[in-house]
Length: 296
Image (cartoon, rainbow, N blue to C red):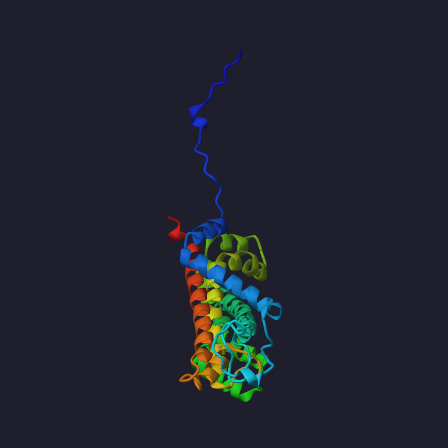
């Protein structure tokens, strides 16, 4: 009978294979505030997508027989100054806010990545020209620039998206440039240059994947800023115009009746505040989860 002899030198501790994104997801799942925020935002997205099916009333048609009603069984959050259901308008307002926030931040991220990668990788004259353009944009306060641009354009969803995209990309460009500068001199990048890999391939396949973490974090946090900016423009009456339901517009109109019907301004303020808090908690959670120093 053959006896199998184990060589102790061949015995190794078997460690489970780890993956950056799997580890990050595991760390994120332990952050209760981030998880609750993610669930809230997921539900908000579902409400926005299926608003035509979920809204109990039309958000546009007035009913002058039920003006400024308090919350009741028929209207769970009451009605506004034209008798329109507040809950329905909040649902449709979520569509506007999330659409503007995600679209603007996506456009700003693509522009910022392109400018930041070119400036950080090539340096020299290219860096000077592109960063001077970024500095010019930074010379104008973001919100004042948005107010100026919107006042020149016809008030619409498209003009708001264009204006906020122009105001948002410089920060992404600076972030990506800084990451590219710290990455381009690493050994694996230099090895790719030695074997003749084209610069565009190096930027796309080697640098960009390794700087995605801060970009994802900035994307999440940036959505909150864009939603707040859109609400502020609508609040001032120079953003998306009525009868389109927007949270900022509802707050602005409800302010006029705050003494007699405070619910007109309170409910949209609450949902706007909760959305801001959720995006910020989720962004903070992603930052902690994607930071290798938080591994312990």
